[in-house]
Image 1 (cartoon, rainbow, N blue to C red):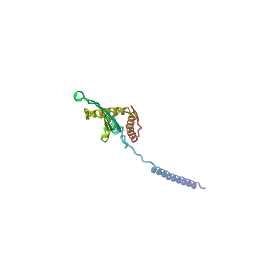
Image 2 (cartoon, rainbow, N blue to C red):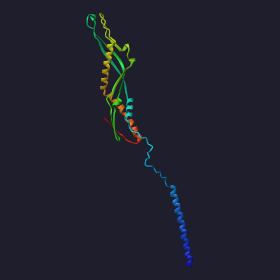
Image 3 (cartoon, rainbow, N blue to C red):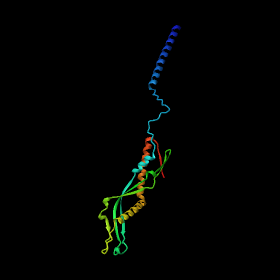
Image 4 (cartoon, rainbow, N blue to C red):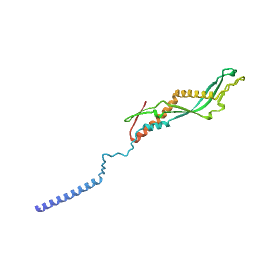
Length: 217
């Protein structure tokens, strides 16, 4: 074969290979360009759109205002109308009486005395001594719920409303002491208050993806 034809053929082969290589590179570059993910550049002061919530003492106090344990307590007041002294009271006798009634008792906590300290994700909370208040149920006071000792046939010694009122007040004080000594009842009120507070802090943690540790003191 003539060397000139050989050189021409060799040159044509090189040109064809270069053309094929160029097409292949362009195709690859085009594919990479189409699949390349979009890059978003955030500024230095970018803040994610997430609620910036933290447990607040004011909110905990509001919750405690709602955490009131109520119960019906049956109470009995005992009293005595003592006989008077002097000639005008001759023949009088002491007269005992009894008054039954029902009370709606509330066990709650003074919000101003609740304390909370937060150190990072650790929260320390202390509850004060519970308040105990009562409200008499008017329907529970009737002639059937009142018993008195018979009066003397010689000289009356009527039982005064003031004497009954004092006896009921004294019974209310005793009732409050009995409730405070009722550990199961007080524990139930405390458990309810703590559960509401813990649930509130837990919800804040879920919103902010923070796990808080609660320590009761």
